Image (cartoon, rainbow, N blue to C red):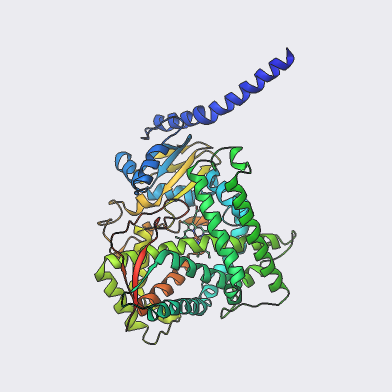
Length: 502
Ligand code: HEM
């Protein structure tokens, strides 16, 4: 009798938890927003997952968010699977979440679990609260302007060497047809080379074994992490921690990367390797923050985690930006010519240094405009860890209850007619006048991208050197679909014909 009661009790408890997770909690959040007069929609259990899937299968995944914003405006509530969330693209609300009340929000459990499967939690990207403040304080000096600037010549050297490969491939062709390449895949290799070179030194980058292990495992982990977002396995409590095939592949990738990075750090600590930048590389700068529990500085394990985080956060984002930038230029001959004319007039002898790079103002505007039209990180997810209130640009206060998820949709903000003149037009010159404050591709506030100066310098160098030495055009007849997962990289690649300039 007692046993039967215990079994019934257990089953009832599990059922209650399930109903609470799938129905009661989401419903109470939706009702709370409706009571505040905030528009939105609620479909029990699956939420907008089927609509998202349809947009995804129609190769227009970002259209889902844009259509809902057209219907409801810059803030509304909706669900991702069972999870209720508030979607915002209003700049003041974004500021409320990302800056004014930043520590009232944590990264959402989905994003956390997915990324932590590769990175663990002891790093700047995933740490929260006081722990994040500590990581940010210790890592910020690493990315100061003078440190990043001393990496310029290594970035240019790696890019030039990479472009020599394109020249050789073009020259050795049996036919007169130009070389045809998946430019995203190519640039993904280049940005990985640059980030590995600037963190660990050029010898590490050139070590095919080390490079191969990092490249292969980063790609395996990224693909698996993206799959786990879409099949919802990364969302479901308990299930997400089961040792299923995808999780095992990520664990294996993490172990292999950690082992390689640990070896690199040990070699540097023994003085067997050194920076190949003009000054310190990122590893030297991180090691300068090394301490013990008393000094509250970074532990050796944290240094290794930060280094892996920089590789993950800095490689795919920048190659995605570069691929869409070349796509935009190939589709806009006037901007292409203007950019080429600027590069030709300033880089007369390929002289890339801080003064010449700062003169490439149109090139920089091309990159900013591409960050607007194709922001590599299209959506950021947060969860409120305490009740708080944020205020929209129309003056409406929105009360957020602890536990509510927030989706910050940068793509909708960057394509909004409210903030951009002719938002669907590619027009780099718009950055001569206004709008920079509404460009949030690197986020704002204490959790904004710490690598943004690094990324902009690197992208400017790559773009200038590609434009200086090559012509490029898109191969006609291909689909250009942004893949919405960790970044909006081109889902089917980006095939381009390239040929050296005379
Ligand atoms: C075009 C290139 C890049 C873009 C568009 C980009 C974008 C972003 C965005 C939107 C965030 C905030 C994410 C969130 O809070 O949910 C972020 C954070 C971060 N990024 Fe980047 N990123 C780029 C390149 C880089 C590079 C090159 C590095 C390092 C070498 C880097 C390192 C980081 C780190 C460590 C964070 C976490 C900062 C924190 O939470 O305090 N990123 N990035």
